Image (cartoon, rainbow, N blue to C red; front, side):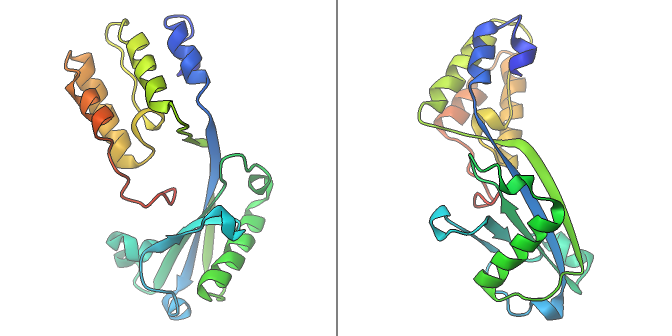
Length: 202
């Protein structure tokens, strides 16, 4: 967006270029249900940096989303995520290395030691915008600069939240703004959409 707006809205472009991002990877692991019987209750867990683990979260996807469980009742699908802000070394590992470290941390946290029947690594380069103190003021300035361009509004994870519900709400508010109704943006600013996924990078 910064590059696209550089000529038409240089002040907005400068603000957008200053937004920092974290990269991450999602590691999806499928297990035979009988091998994953010892998983704890719940839909997953977060791992604080002070724990010294590589994974930052795990989602028990088969429990969290019924459609995954219904697709193959004989399997349990888990996801881990790696990559916090400023962590670049871990993302330089190959897919096998990320699967191995995820399996190690899962075993330490849950006791799950079985061999997965399938794995997949999905990388998101610069996928998570960071919200330091003052980010809301930056977003307000960006929107103010862009408001002078007819037929243009901004939306997405960098503005109103990284979760899918927040991004959808941001898109609806942008459409309303293009049609001259600023209430959607005002409402998002006053009452941000809460993530439904516990910050696990889903």
